[in-house]
Each structure stands twice: as C-alpha cells, then as structure tokens.
Image (cartoon, rainbow, N blue to C red; front, side):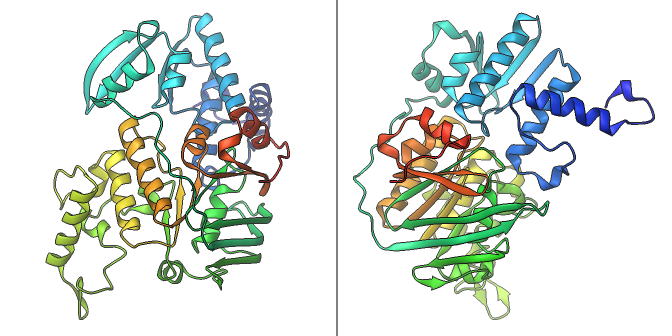
Length: 402
C-alpha cells in the first residue's frame, strides 16, 4: 500500500525504515520474517509499526498492549499522547479499564452491539465504567484459597525446539508444575511461550530434552496420546486451533468425545447423544448460542472461549494449558474464565497459564515463570512481586527463583 514506491518496491530501503521505527519505539521485529511465521502478538506489533510507518492521521488500535511489557505499554501511551498533540485522532479499543482511564479523553461503551453511552474519562471511575460494560458490578479481586501444592504433574527438562522460521525458540528450558497450583508464564510475545505450549501438547517437535506428565515420559507424543494422559489445551488462537469455525456448536463440543460412548455407536456418531452433551455444556457454562446448528464462528469471542473452556474442562484434566485465555474478552467474560481457572486449581489440577497480561497473572497465579529468548530467566512468588520487577525480567533482566 505504499504509493511512494511506485511499480518497483525497494525492499531494502523499506526494511531500513521499518528497523528505524522499531528501534525508535523499542519494538523488536525482523523486517524479513514471513507473517505466518510470527505469533499473534508479533503480528499485532507489525500492525502498529505499519500504521506508524505510513504516518496515519487517524489511528485505530484494537487491544494494542496485549503483547507488551508495562514499560513498553507506557512508551506506546507516550507515542499516542504525542500523536494527539500533533492533531491526530486515535481510537483506542481495549478491555483493560486502567489503560482506558490512563490514555483516553472520552470513553464510548458498547454492550451486545448497542451503544450504552459516551462519557468524559475524568468524570467516571473504573468500577462505574465496568458496570456500564457488563450491566452489573464486577469483581476486580477474586477470592483465592491458600495453595495446597500437590504432586509433580508436569516436568519439562532441557527442552529445545525451533519455531516456524527455523530459529531456536526453546533453549534448554526447564519448568515444573504441581497439582493444585497455577504456574503463570509471562513474557513478551515471541520469546518461546507459544512453542512451549505446543511442545507440551504434542503440536511441535522437541529436538532435545524431555516432557513428563505424572512421571510418564510423553516427549513428542501425539496430541491424542497426551489428551488420553489428561493434558488439555486452551490455545491462544481459539478459531484457528481450538475450534473448527464452520462446524456447529454441537460438533465442536464433541471433538474430545466422538470416539467414546455414548456418542459413538459402532462406526457412527449418535447425534442425539451429542446434542444432549452440548446442551449440558451450554447450560453449565452459560454459553449464549443463537442456534446449535449454526457455525461456531458466529458466536461472540466470549462465548467461543466459554465453549472451548467447557469442552476441555469436562475432560477432567490433570494438566491444563491455558494460553491467553482472556485475550479480547470483556470484563464479564474475563471474570468468568479466571474463576474457572481458580476452580480447577482448587480441584488439584496443575494449570500452566501463559499470558502477557501481568495483572491477570498476578491475580490468579501462585508462581510466575518469566521467559526471555527461550529460557526461564526467573521464577517468583506471585504474592510477593510487583509488575515493574516482572517487566524488567521480561526485558531480559535475570530474577531470583522462588
């Protein structure tokens, strides 16, 4: 879309300009990487650079800080304030109320596709804003029982794996998760978090190292084998990986069950039994479904996530991998998902929570492992650490283990 380039595109010149912008705003990006090789977070970072590169006068940002450290978020806010002072218009779409309060002048609230109202930011509090969004009071602090750390469920030893670009993504990584605890994994997008989840769930090959679940070596086992071993997965890309967008709610609900009784009848599927099972999940998890036979892609993001969560949790997991489980959700759906994760932890499940939302990690995790360039640079007690410390660790500063 660069009109100045004409018919011939000077990629080398463009790459230098991209690198200059990335350096100026502290965004780490490879100009020659293929977009499909980047994580969702890195792709979002490219979008921000692209708008800055084109010198946009109207900038629309949709959840722009989901992949940034606190320090990088503040730098972005500084950029936005500078652009505002230059007379540019910015639409900042976010579910993070503290960011909205910090960076905006006016706030427009939408609920179920309808305009609730527009207010001046200085005239409203976070709690009042949340109530406008959800229609009820929202819990900003969840009650948590004391941790009762159980048996060792997951152990990853000296894990090494490559990303889709053939670059080392995991570099001798070690991590252990026990039953009855939530281990949060924090890090800027592109530091190996996605590859870690994929190696544990059988979606990516380890070139060396070991993964054990409850003492059983499952290194490079198939996803089916790992599911049978009690490993369940809530991926970051709910439509691309977690759900089949063109299949119905019923079809997606039974993806873990279709080989089992009562849904399997010989070589056929008992669709009536599948419908009954899906109805149970819909009721138990309060999933808003317009039509059970409609493609699941027509559901809202929150209801897609509830369906995915319901399907995985109904399998009674021993180990639950949750990757960005609240990304793009409103405060009500976010509250629901976090409560479910805490319930699983209280039921003795080992939960590995991968998120770039540090507020979320500190709210629900018991320990926090910080990743940087494919390594765990520190593991800290989530109850005795501040966001600034974790942010520094996400930028490569080594932290003390807990």
